[in-house]
Amino acid sequence: MTESPSESLSDSPFNRNIDDKKNDIVPEIPIEIVSEEEMALLEAALVSARASFSAIPAIRSSTFSFRSNVRSIKSITALSKRRLSGCSEPDIEDSGGLKSAQKKTRMADSFLHRFRKKGLSVTDITATEWCEKQMEFVLLVGKRKVSKAMKKGSARHAKLEEEVVKKVKVRIESIEDRWALKLLNFVTGVNQLLFEGLTRELPLIGFAEGVWMVGVIDEIRMPVTETIRNPLLVDTKTRVKDTLPAEPQRRNGRLQLMCYKYMWDDLVADKFPSKKFFDFFSLNPHHILSDEIREMTANSGFPAETLDDVVRYYRNTCSMLPPAHDQLLLRYELQKDHSLLGEDEFAYDSDWVKNQIQGCLEFWLGEREASYTPEEERWKCGFCQYSSVCPAKNGNHNDPPS
Image (tube, rainbow, N blue to C red):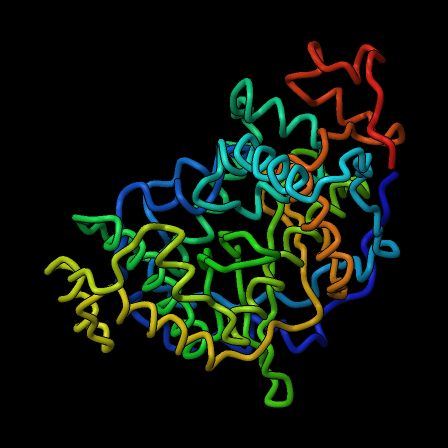
């Protein structure tokens, strides 16, 4: 069922009128350092359209105005709080030592250990919420095929990024160089946000619920009022048809944005564990960065000699930022002409997003088998390339007990 957009967001502090910006001087788009293969480490397998980016976003320059008088869906529906179904593991062992050994065995055999040794992406979390069994097929059989719609969506994101970003490739000589670039690109993106009020494709790296997570925020806006200083996180979804998505799709989009806020707020609270970062990724904090990167950092105003220097810049930058706004914004565009179909402005729910992440981790850590999508959402199977071999399609399955 499609709901009609309603309520204009023109009075929102996060929307500025185009007419108010006509006389603005368009700033020159600055340069940022990027490396080949960067985005491959930031976005994981399921959404192939994003996993193949060749460079990480650059310093951005806000060269356009936020639209006002757009149609919106403010809180399209009451926020769905469906918990991922899990199962309680029978406690058949009386020996604590045996439990510990079995837990270690599960960890060693887990999908996280086998396929995501460098951490999960937010895409992994949302793909798991969409259908754990599909995620299992992706890991064991292969990635989803890239559809025309996915390619168009990827192209639209690239176009939006190009409006405020100029990319420049730089040669990297070590794993420390690669991670330095990730962190530096966050710093430069935040600088653009603070000075220009807008940044796009901002990479996030953080530690959440005991695992390393990465993600890329579509867009961050600073409010145009002096009374509100919390940045607004925005994600744009493209639609093939001129209709708004079903509730499970909206829920999945909300989860994505809530994950970003969860990570953002942790970072600004100075919860980035530097030592764990160096140890987990086997990095030498005192490694001297390449000449090219050191020159770039010096020209950018924050000279760095080692990876440890860059990590300190990263943490210091995070400590200067306020938490993200509790209101989050999903935008839906029509692919063929980029017209705005509607907007879903909704409130952050910390308990819900934590429960969702923890439920996903039960699957990724091997604590239970993959669950199937619930009966009322089995229409998803009609769009799944694995449906012909999935027991759910043939009715030959038993969901784990909840």
